[in-house]
Image 1: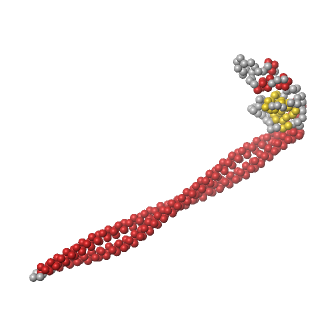
Image 2: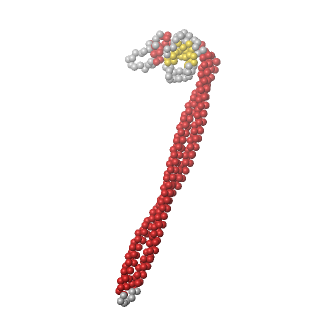
Length: 343
């Protein structure tokens, strides 16, 4: 860092080599800013795409799990339908056995009814004579026996017929339940297939979103490389300024040694910034800084010693960092001397 008089420094800042460097540096700063914006925007898009892909993957997995649950329900309902069908077949077997017994009783009941009719006809044909009373009593006894047998068979037939009817009702009920469960099983099976199709579509969408996220990741890497290249170009221009103009290059200022004071330096602003400093900073404006505080306190550049050092105290610094004229409280004495206020 070489010492340069203020007049020579201002001539250097207006020279064609420096103006050419300044134009290149401004272009590099703009390129770096654009690259940083593209990198930030691409990174945000990539993060959103990754989240969307992950969310789609989770939804697809949940949907596929739901399809598995629907398949389990369909299998369970189908098994219930099959169980009712087997139970109905078993009841049909028992019904057939009962039907055979009932039919046998029906035939026997018909025979008993015919025997009663025959006994009644025999009583009507009993002849008169010395043995007529005996024959009539025998015929009546035979008729009563036949009637008792008929009533017994009628009762037995009624009980067995009710069992047959009950068994058939149970068969029809089992078939009804089997039919109902079969219908529901088919519905659950169709629902499971539909959910599987939805899950396949969601998996396909998730894969497309992952592919888009990978593409954005590649674009983000390209943007990061472009940003790094733009940063290297800007850093290279700052290194070039050090070699060509004998200054120290920072992020916001270029520095040259003050020719009259080893504790001070010239600071040339590289960008405009109205906040963050004690003075509004303008590009290529020359300021004076001291060794102790650097750019934490800027003074407008002037020939000779810096004003704060020329006064021999901190009055100038207090003028810029303290309350402005008219802002102090009533009755409060000014921390700045009348000479500084006049200047």
